[in-house]
Amino acid sequence: MKKKLFVIIAIGLVLNIDMFAQKEYAEKINQSNREGLKDGLWKENTKSWRTEIYYRNGRKNGLYKSFSISKGELSCFGEYKNDTITGTWYYFGDFGHLIMIQKGFKENDKPIPIEHHAQGVCPYQCYCISYYPNGIKKSEGILLWDKDPEGDFSFEYGEWKYYSDTGVLTKVKKFE
Image (tube, rainbow, N blue to C red; front, side, top):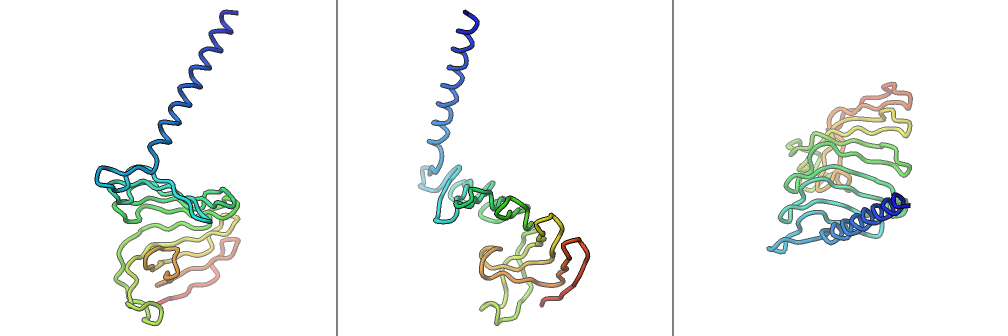
């Protein structure tokens, strides 16, 4: 009987400590530093998306995650360093399958036709690989973009390769 009582008390203490830790953690989300700049983990919601991003002195620094509000599924995750997209970014479909990877982010100096972009140059580029729902590579090549690689102003550039859903190279197209 004493042993059961001890186990019940121990479980109660653990649960109480865990609940306190969760509350303390929740109080540290969406905080600003002394200068009023975002600092630490920020969780924000829009009509369609919930995002989680880490900030340091008002600049995006660390892991970024985006979730679909309607499905509750992870739609994207990647990393920022000093407000700049870096590393490898992963994009997921409605059922959790990988649909795209973007990596090799850097500034771009390749011009594009002026009818596509007022400045004639998209300031950024990355290497993009898209996938079929079965996990087979669908296409790959350089993607030029303006403010966001998934925004309205993104363009395929250079040589792009396209594959069938069985992985067979079906077409190579040159964009300039």
